[in-house]
Image (tube, rainbow, N blue to C red):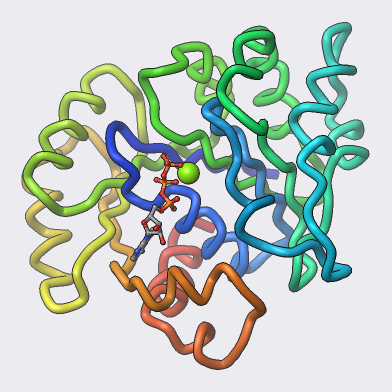
Amino acid sequence: MALIVLAADKGAPGVTTAATALAAVWPRPVLLAECDPAGGDLAYRLPAADGGVINPAKGLLSLGAIARRGLEPAQIHEHTQKIVGGLDILAGLMHGEQAAGLTWLWGPLGRSLAAIQNADVIADCGRLGTYPQIGDLLAEADITVLLTRASLDHVAHLRERLSITKAQGVVVIADPRTYRSGIDDVRRVVGPTVTFVHGLAHDPKGAELLRGQWGGRLDRSLLIRTARDLARKLA
Ligand SMILES: Nc1ncnc2c1ncn2[C@@H]1O[C@H](COP(=O)(O)OP(=O)(O)OP(=O)(O)O)[C@@H](O)[C@H]1O
Ligand SMILES: [Mg+2]
């Protein structure tokens, strides 16, 4: 099915939070893949489905250990885990140093993720620029979405990034009080370099709730309501 890459240029606009929220409300079967070469965060943020901890050694790291001689899409599921709520994840690296030995992995991983038969894949690729080899994974994506905050410095970096990285869309983490105008401002700056500019609410409470069990407050949060809207558009 489809490989959807989420990434950012500078700062920490909320890529991991957006990827988690989108995967949680995705309208089709989905795998959330932590492909940030700087390391994953989910193992520290969310419990496993059985209430225990996510095993950080089972995921990208274990996949990297067996994939040198070739990687088939069917092998990916041997390295995934279920987190609270039943979402399938491919846990990320434990720290950025591990990426140094895995520079060859991103191309084969991207090809396999894009070829998974029974699920879409939302891949959190972190900040672009620090690990150029992640570009090999982006090259396999059906859709690449860059996230940004609406502030001038973030948007200026985003515009530079779009001149060197091909992306179909931009998602603005926008203040709910100026939601539409914030998104429109970014749309004006990035112009026709992307096909779409959508929004996701800046919602600190929702982002905090997303680190625990699913509940009514999270379900009604602005973060999740705007994530549902975004998921529909992307899917
Ligand atoms: N939509 C949002 N509304 C409010 N706060 C948010 C939102 N998204 C993320 N945050 C907060 O911003 C911080 C960084 O979020 P997150 O880890 O998702 O960013 P990131 O872009 O993945 O960063 P990194 O590049 O370090 O992995 C966290 O404290 C998170 O709670
Ligand atoms: Mg992140």
